[in-house]
Image (cartoon, rainbow, N blue to C red; front, side):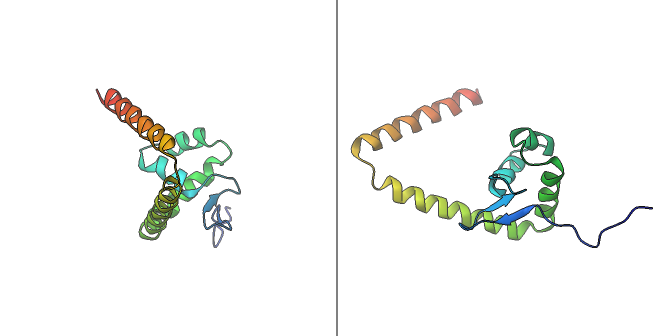
Length: 117
């Protein structure tokens, strides 16, 4: 007979900086969910993050599907914080650093255009 547990421990813990890490690794919930939202299968995600057990990836996705509003709010807050920090850092760039960043942005835009054709 199978022993059905009353609850299942989630393989997610929040670190000191407020990031949710998966399976005690450095892999964030943000990273796993970004792959999932791009259409990657759990197996594809595991291939990209082999330190995270496949069963834990399924558990994270199941949790997301059951708590989508809360997870989406967390991800949106993390994105806003990331944007704020990036803007603070970029505000200190020298003119040369700004020019280099703009050049890299143009190269990335061109790559996206080339890839879509």
